[in-house]
Image (tube, rainbow, N blue to C red; front, side, top):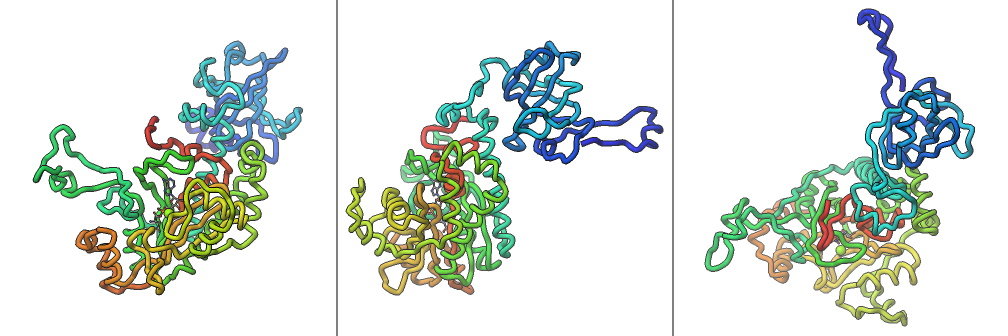
Amino acid sequence: MQLVIPSEVEESLGVNMTQLSPTSITDALQSSTPIAEIQVQGWVRTRRDSKDFSFIELNDGSSLRNLQIIARNTLSNYPAVQRVTTGASISVTGALVASQGKGQKWELVADNIEIVGTADDSYPLQKKGHTPEFLREVAHLRPRSNLFSSIFRVRSRLAFAVHHFFQERGFVYVHTPIITGSDCEGAGELFRVSTIDLKNPPRKNGEIDFAQDFFARPTYLTVSGQLEAEAFALALSKVYTFGPTFRAENSNTSRHASEFWMIEPEMAFCDLNGNMNLAEEFVKYLIADAKKHCPDEMELFARFVDKELLSRLDFVIELPFQRTTYSDAVDLLKNSGAKFEFPIDYGLNLQSEHERWLTEKHFKCPVTVFNFPKEIKPFYMRLNDDGKTVAAMDLLVPGIGEIVGGSQREERLEMLEGNMRRHRMDPADYKWYLDLRRYGTVPHSGFGLGFERMLMFITGVPNIRDVIPFARTPGSAEF
Ligand code: 4AD
Ligand code: MG
């Protein structure tokens, strides 16, 4: 927008200081009036020459929309402008005027075009219609494509919505540590954090002596901020974390990343029912937020990624989710007549094909499965009165499967110690966590929502690698 220096200041300096500061293309396109002089900056999508002028489609990533630049042959550097190619960066000043062309309200008639950075024909995003696989190889350039700029604007908006949702409801944001000594999920899928010299590690009784490591104990990248979040919930009542988590799980699927972001709310004085209610409300809220604040992007996903996306999401927002116990879910699956690759029986984990059958074929909507056998769930989950199941829940959605996992936590000290022993954990290693049950324990619950899985669900993008700016998966940590 135009920055006008008051005339007294100009006079005192003895110069004409009228200057422009750049406008985003989104703001320019939303102008209600023509603007005599405006500056925009961005990357050239296409250039097309006609007799006396060239058209340049310019995009600055502020939205999907391009601004059409009219470069007349009277520009002093017109020959150079005619050599500008796709991918080059330019800075343009000129007049924003009503467009003669179809499909756009405004265009910019350039008075000056500064070529900031050229690009040549080795620029990889020359034409439309690159595959996601190809674009993954140029992850540093793919945010300049319509699909990926849209995905990452939605990712940004939803991160904001996460905070909005919890802050509006009185939750306190807690930064839990990224380096930790505990394996919260007990699955042993940890990346070790160490400064030990791999060629010459200190040893004790033949084993590597981690007491001599940087933190004087074994440490890892966190798989979950839950245990630390519990400590804060038992002080601040309602808290949430939102940060990166890491799993050294060697599963090369479209839904697993080695580094992903998780949102983990934790609530004191809350049972499994309250927990399931919050998870369902949260999922609906994020979908509604994306539809409201990113309509152009959602439209693009519906056109190019998944034709049924918008109707499916409307359906998810409008209708209540289903709930079923694990044992009822197993019965449904066993009697389904469907052919599954993995066996299904009481006591076995639900595989993604089972989760998808429940949501896509049977209930045809998101489903929260609860009360799982204690043997297949982590140590911290609360034992139900039946002595066999724990107050666990998994929220499953069509197309993806599990998107949320959570539980009511075991708040009874002796029971928790017993669980730890059953899971071959040493209660002495978790003294601080047990203290939370020693001093003012209360029933409490929480869950973890995988941010990338949620983004996959909302955008329809089928591979987790495409909703992460620079994905880390087994065998791949480029960029
Ligand atoms: O079910 P998970 O393992 O639960 C926990 O970590 C609990 N501590 C959460 C809690 O109760 N506070 O993981 C939670 C969610 C999953 O439902 C899934 O959406 C996502 O995290 N997730 C992954 N996302 C991408 N890549 C992976 N490798 C993931 N593993 C889990
Ligand atoms: Mg889980």
